Length: 254
Image 1 (cartoon, rainbow, N blue to C red):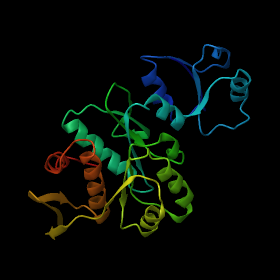
Image 2 (image 1 turned 90 degrees about the vertical axis):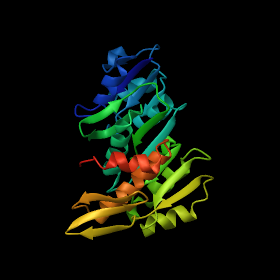
Image 3 (image 1 turned 45 degrees about the vertical axis):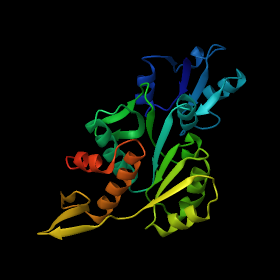
Image 4 (image 1 turned 60 degrees about the vertical axis):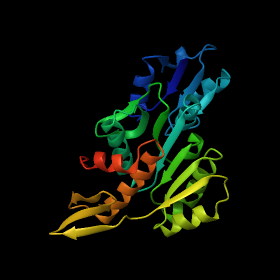
């Protein structure tokens, strides 16, 4: 593919561009746009009157947001999208750690690095993506929302409506705003709720109660327990069972 990017100097898309360049022709200069350009990917922070964007429109080229491009690129894969205000980064990190622990191949792209990793595009069944304001255009196959604020109601309602029909939404039922939103949304998807798992505290150290026994977590918080539970459900929908997840997560460090 010949993919043209219109980006700001400090764009977060550069790791994606670098990863794509191993298999595709990537261009960025306006004079490099032509009838042979398959699509134009536009940085979400650019003005709609940016001269390069206006030129692409004049040339009649296919113009996509970054999220729409990722969907188009991975439309035949299982897209796992993690969204939320506070919890999504930690959940993404725990899911990625678990997949790597078991050498399960996965493609991924995050808006900012997680433990030094941001983009990897390979021929895999699963694609792990970070949800954002344009997450609805990713059309997740499996989606998770960890938490939300009232001002984000419209955004997350669109996100849920964008989930592939028959897909899965995992959500935090302890977030009352989120629970109400999910309950009232009639999109034909499977809804799976999660909550903070049982735990005990001994000598100021937290222990997660699992079917295999107590898992020591050190000085963890209740929010971290919730994130562990969220990551567990995501991993189970990616083929990793509960016992294996706990074995992997025992070695996870933030």
